[in-house]
Image (cartoon, rainbow, N blue to C red; front, side):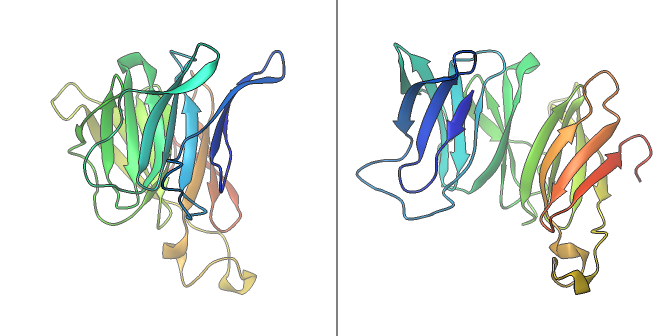
Length: 220
């Protein structure tokens, strides 16, 4: 298990769950350039194939770390170029790939911890992609305007193809005081998917404090 602490230290902690013990800790920010952004980091995770390999993403931050010699150390890889706000990342272990999303609607491909290129299917339309979840045929992303988009692996050079986009309705009235004007203010913040082999239901957490269940087999 890995956990990410918040402002101001931003400590990444690597745990042994069986022993209920923290094994190592490291600040993931530059000590010489401390950030005052209290929402600097968005996600941390462990590779499903290599439990010593970790990833941290956030605003202008996409880094790999490895647990070695009883310590967390920086690991090669990441994304180079102009800094962006990386909102979510997703491991796709069968192909040793990762998908990284941004607040501009970009989807970036990582292979073996090395940046490859923006996926050609990236919306890149200014609509943020805040959440990602893997499933047996590819991955699902969600974000601004309540949009949920399903992508499946393909054999062509684009690697993935967009199958469909579903707009999630808020189910709230403005009088509830939880949303702004209209459903376009709704944001999909997190996913959970029914385990294989069915993968029938998608549980969504939204910005207006709702938990919604979407039947992928019948959703339009």
